[in-house]
Length: 288
Image 1 (cartoon, helix red, strand yellow):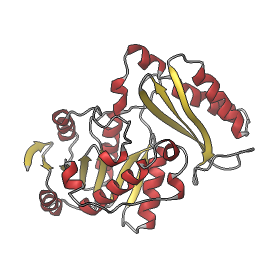
Image 2 (tube, rainbow, N blue to C red):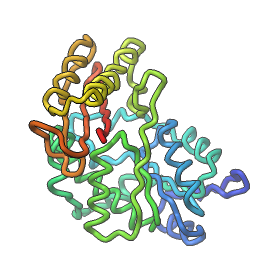
Image 3 (spheres, rainbow, N blue to C red):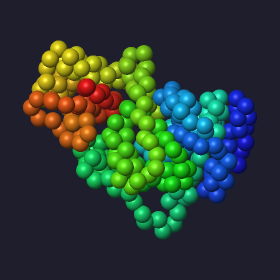
Image 4 (cartoon, one colour):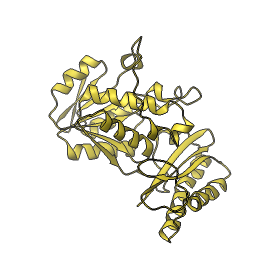
């Protein structure tokens, strides 16, 4: 287990589960956990900062979880840079980093899965079968291993946050799920590790996701309450971008994530998935 000095703290880096448990016993409560797949950006670091403010100790997991990737998705090419990530986390004052391997998380003979049902089915769940089973399972394992009092997730992955919140409630995990605002680039593009895939022209085109959300928000603010009208304006803006291939747009109930028809009467989630070249990007915005 590696130990480095960081702002007067010891940064412990554990791989094996027994190392992790030994290190966890030495951390003061409350513990804030930030689960990640690595290749960290300012969005991740904003979660670390929130955890640092609200807890005595902070742990981060770095694990590219194979069970949440589909057979045609980018598991093999997902960006990774562990030395860079550890350097950033050391500077951020993190106490413990867990970097398990797939063999540690899913040993031979593994056969136990967590399935969150209705809220996992629309939107990303419809486009990526099995994705949320992998997410819920790995996050449940992180919660069991690290025993945090709070866990931090970004609003960019809105359905993921909803699934994890539902799982924690249903399985009686004794912790708070904290959802932090999406961190954006200057042109509005939501920060994502997958943004690294984009070339210069694709990066320029990717700003269309947030631009479509802004236009739908403006329409809503002007008094429009028809869900299909908001979906229509998002579709029109995205389809006008030659490098963008729209997978879906949604205006859904914020709690159930069921698609809204007719008039919006409560909180709603605008969201979409768009391919820019071969890179699949998602974004969302909450209508209050």
